[in-house]
Length: 456
Image (cartoon, rainbow, N blue to C red):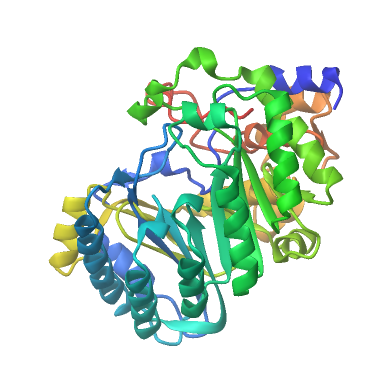
């Protein structure tokens, strides 16, 4: 993009949710009734699909950029004890789900799920297969720290049914990695991908982050050229969210070493250029995929979705989050588990769903959530069709479109009187455009407190 496009995008830079849910997670209410979540699980009908997310909140070492719910496990006994509780939560939740409900996707996140001993991972997968009805072709993905992988561990994953490996590489530059407390030689990622291919894993994803300390256009170019050479099926190239008011350890990163908005823009554009030249297709705000990948097919067919793990091909009717801090998504609303591991364990040991907070969606939430989903995934939404489908006046969203008048004038967004389209050359603007339809984004004393990262 030219310098004039850059200036236009930066003019609208501001804080906005990532819209992995709508309403966004900060809107969830405390003390949400666990009985409601039980009812939502029971309401899943035979023949409907369910996806599972399992949170493993442990790491061997804290990375300063980390925004996840995790803790440092110097003693594996803590991990073992947690997994015992997690297996019990699986049983409690599964007892509420009809056996005719089919699990089509499982995602292990953290933290670092690859901290689990091979036998513990196998036991966890065995418990899931006993408790739930898994589709024969279920996608099973695990987020992986390259520093914790061996060929034997990857073989264990394949035997247990893992079909996709998501490598949290972030960067290849030693200076950048040292600044965020993540020493990780390039060869670890190279070996992990080689072993995954040899073991039969067909889908490899790499997470690369821009906006980290000491990154330059030259350094991100070197990193993305190496990524392209490794040829993973998917690359998530997303911006570091510096939110020290939420994650105190981020304060260790000197803000003077962080790229400003202009450089962040340049970093993304440089990386995007390399990936596109290497044959990847840009998907949404931060994903790049090979043309033969399932995510590319989902995007082309309008089936791409977005959840708490980012962009996904998952089309299940519900997502059940298991583990401390895990979030569940149902047609009726959202529920998040207790974050504190002791409180989480106490609830599970009492035979309860460990619900901490949640939200029941209103009809307005459902409609706005679909608009935001389509904008974030497709960069297009037919507002007239959306209104008609929900028995709303044709011009129901005129006030929301009016908020986008400056972006329309700058050709970042186009509105033809019916459909709203985000300029694909300016993916950085998608969160800002989506926010125009967010009924919870209105200024108030509470909303003025920092809750989100910057869009660019």
